[in-house]
Structure formats: structure tokens, C-alpha cells
Amino acid sequence: MMKRVAAFTMAAVGLFLFTAPGTAQQYPSRTVTIVCPYPAGGPTDQTARVVANFLSKKFGQTFIVENVTGGGTIIATNRVAKASPDGYTLLLHNLQISANATLYKNLPFDTAKDLTAVMMVNNNPLVLLGRKDLAPNSLPDLLAYMKDHRLKAALPGYGATGHLATTLVAQEAKVPVDQIPYRGAAPAMTDLMGGHVDLFFATPQSAVPQVKAGQAKAYGVTSKDKLEQLPNVESFVKVLGPKLEILYWQAMYAPAGTPEAVLKMLNAALQEAVSDPTIIKTWDTEGFFIYPKEQRSAAFANSLLKSEITRWGQVIRDNNIHVDQ
Image (cartoon, rainbow, N blue to C red; front, side, top):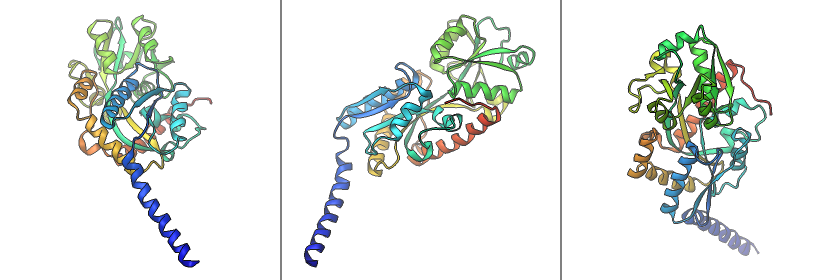
């Protein structure tokens, strides 16, 4: 009897040791879904589709992008946080995921515990645009003007990077701003060009064409250095200090508990993707920057998420920002 039990135990252990690595080696053996919390056509969706296309070719399996919108990106994030940790449901999100951890009081998941990072994908600064007939012509002049003129700033949504950037500028420059929320960047940009609002933080890919067409003024960028596409536009960091370095970063996440072997495979594939000349050229044209090699590990991405939760949590609390659920 004891011999049969011992034999059964050894066989079970052997099967486990054989199956666990084998599962990772076979990944992916079916379609993988990359959940995007935003509508099709936006910057996060565009990045997700570039990544999905590369991974499909790399692994010889279909990687699809599913746009799960609504709820301030919580619906999409929750879906991935609660998904089976097998690598077949992934999340492509941005800075807003870190703000939501404080912005919403009753999240159905723990951002830092229920998700694990695969890799930082790319980032870009924001450009502060003004309506084309706004009087000031430089960032210092605009900030001085705002002390005596209460301007209206469009927000692409609560908790979005543009909302956080607008709040931080008002806080650090000590100027009053009326913040007007919109359902996305597109209607906010439309109202800016129509003169219905005065200011709007946009991504370079949407800001540069409007500035060059004379439909909007560019006042500042939230990177340490000036943008190559807008060489005459000053850096907020130079004018207001290092707190104003704000990067609209994008990263891939998986459910916590996803096998380490699968995470490593995905990380290695993403490292290939961001080294691909075609992708580099595409993102360079759109104003996206790729993280240096030393910042492409899952550990770095997890650490950055935690630090951004702390950073934006403080800004949100300091300015009494909250969203009713």
C-alpha cells in the first residue's frame, strides 16, 4: 500500500513539473485579448493595435484589441484584474490607472495588488494649447495673464492626464482656472478651436497639426526639454519647476498571478516591438518616446505604477478632487 502511495505521489509531482513549464512553452496557443479602456482611434487604442499586430506576427497567434469603455476606465481594468491569470487577457492602459487608485473611493480591485506589469511601452509629454485669439504669446506671459483673467480649461475627462496636468499647473502657478469636463479629447479640442474654452492639454500628435495650421496656440510642454516639432514652445519644467514634468505613459498589464514564464515571454516580445524600426518611426512621428533599455523590465513598470499612485494621490487630495460612484 505504501509503495503504491509513494509511486502515485512521485507520478503526480512528475506530471506537475512536466505540465507547468510546458504550458508556458506553448503560450500562446489561442487568441489573446488586449483590453483597451478607451474608444477606437485614440492614442492608447492606436498603441494597443500596433502592439497587437506585432505580437500576432511574433507568436503566430491572434492578438486582438477589445475596446471596453466607460466608468472612467474602471470597467476595463476590473475585467483584466478579475480575469484568469493565464496571459490570455491583457490590459493596455496609461497614467490614468494610477490616478484612479485615489480618485475613486470604492474600486472593485486593488490596482497595485490585482495587476502585474509586463512592461512600459511608450510615453509622450502634453502640450498646453490656447485658443488662437488668446492674448498672451508665451508661457510666462500666459501665467501672468491668468492671475488677472479667470480662464476656462477643457478636460478630456476626470482623472485623465490632461485633468491632472491642468490641476497641477493651477496649483504650482497659483492661478484660478475653471475646469470644464468633456467626454474625451476630441470634443474638447473642437470647443477649443471654436473659442468656447481657452485652454486644453493635448498630446503632441493632436496638438502639432492644429498649431501648424494656425487653429490654436501652443504655450508649453510638460517634458524637461522642448519638442522637436515645436522648437519655440517652452518647457513647463523650466518655468514652474520639476513637478511639472508630466509624461503620458502607456504600459501593459496582466492579472496578478500570471506565470512568470509567460510574463517574461511577453516582456521579451515587447522589447522586440519597441526596437522595431517601423514602430520606432511611427511613434516618433506621433511624438511618442520609447523607454531606454534599463527601464523596460517588469520590475521597473511595477515600481513606476506605485510611485505614480503616490504622486497623483497627493495632487488629488491636495485639490480635493473626487468622483461620486
